[in-house]
Amino acid sequence: MSIILYYIYPSVQKSLFKKLKRIKMKKTTLALLFTSFCFKIIVAQPEYWQTIYTSISGGNKVNSTLFEKDLTFISVSGSMFYEDTYYLEIRDEIVLPLVANPISSHYFYATEIENNGDPFFFAAERTGTNYNKIYLNTFTKSGMIDTAFEIPDEFENQSAKGPAAIQVNDGEIRLFGNQSFHKITVANDGTINLDWSKPANFGLIADAKSYNGGYILCNEYGNLIYTDGDSEPVWVKNLNSILMAVLVLDDGFLLAAEIDEESALIKTDFDGVVQWEKKYGEGFATDLDFSNEDGIIFTGKNQNFGAFVIKTNLEGDVIWEKFYDEDNNGTKILKSKFGGYLLQTKGIISAKVIRIAEDGSTGELTSEVPPKAISANNIKSSVSAKGQLFWNGDDINTFFPRDSSTSTIFAGGLWFSGYDQDGALHSAFTNYTTSDFSPGPFNADPEDSEAWDHEWRISKKQINKLREDLLDGTLDDAVTIDLWTYPGAGNPNFNIFGGDAVVPEHTAPFIDANNDGVYNILDGDYPLMKGDDMIWWVMSNKFNGANIGGQALEIEIKGTLYAYACDENPILYNAAFLDFEITNYSENEYSDLHIGTFIDFDIGCYLDDYIGTLVETNSVFGYNDN
Picture 1 (cartoon, rainbow, N blue to C red):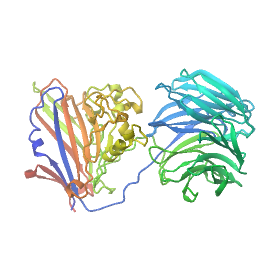
Picture 2: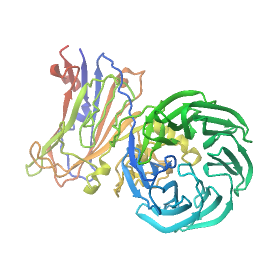
Picture 3: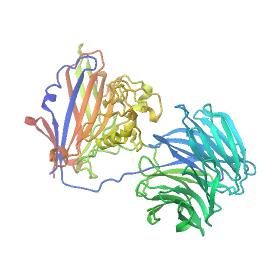
Picture 4: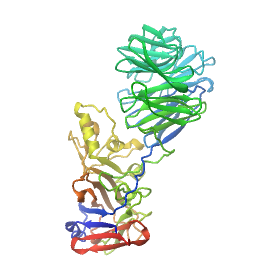
């Protein structure tokens, strides 16, 4: 037999039928304890990751740009600029101008210029009828700034990787071409200036990194070049291989390469002397980065299977190898501040950005926000900002034990009904697919409903990590989207998903570290936790209410679903809590107000579920026949 116990605190139960009067910010709190007992454990559902497609133009298959901002990533391929959230919602899609024939033109570099909080972007295009020019542009998300700047250069091979560029500081770019090196400065109005050019005869530079006050460069002609801070060569070594990317290690340099038509890694000391080289099969390597586990992650093209990613230790020994895009080359690999990696692939007419987990796994193409569920103890449960309880309205129900694949509660919701001072009936309810509640605070602008259609999952571990990271006054590590956008009063980072929504006072509770009344994690603020793992949301009943008769109640509900990671206490370890803060925004005083819950228990087979009560403990329980 399996049993689910559903408990209402006696002190709360006695107050449910009292009048809920119209007093500004008057609150009624309902707390529910859910405890469940059953005995079948099934393997947990795997975490999934996503991919996103981008379109491009331009014939070069190895030049592209990929970098992260605070909460988004930027992908530039061919002439297409994309900024996406990590929930794969495209914030901006910009078609960049191509000066010459699109077949021979493409953008090889882009970066953001902060410009004292008024940012714009700098991009470099390799083009010309004979592949003999570099065009520099600045642009905002609303369009190009009329600052196009032309630099002559010769490119012998249209398909070669390069030129390379480094952003030295907010307004200074170093550009390393085929015939010359350049210092470029960008003014606050987006105007581009060429400060100087110096001749260089090393061949087209494929990659560049800052090193020891200068720069370490490499190219497909096998040259490894170290320059000083003024781009003057200090030494040049030829490694007799095709060099595509360079990484600065603690004890030398590591290069992504092609040796004898095989992808390879080459390790040198700081003088460019080769210490080892290792090959990884037919093809070529194009880019590399550090892994999240003190190793290396690199990408390229396998001639038989397409874009690959290989993870190794610092000695180049393979940990895993995966293939992702059989039609395209792997062009960029980036260790993500949000965990895992971002892979950019590119071909003649298409490109992808693929988000990869630490073990190399990924998921199907999706544009949906990943579902939220608490799982700190032996219960996994979710809610919806539209009013559904114990499930998210889609694919996450309530599971006990946590790792079961069969839910123990399929769905639930709050039901209200009561009479106003004139005897008129008011009501609001939620069932499987219908709800009288809409996401957001009662006084939120209806046009901002999409911004509030969100559940914020926060854990105590995340908060502790954030506070420890900010001890030195700077934010260095990854921060979850929900911590950034948590709807504390006035949060300037709330509109990551677009829009102009304003977070009013007294929305989500938080610790205000600097007492300015505004939630901002960069000021040391963080959510006020309940339990060790929680989901917070806010919803309102404004204009509907006809689903079970009566007028709308005009109430706002702030909800928290939470649990404790307390395995030494069997009651807390097998319990989840729901807490509601209910505010009456109407002009009415309600009497005989009844608050109830709709619960669909799903204990094993849903055809033989039953319900019972324990009057003496104010409890309801569910059980099944076997």
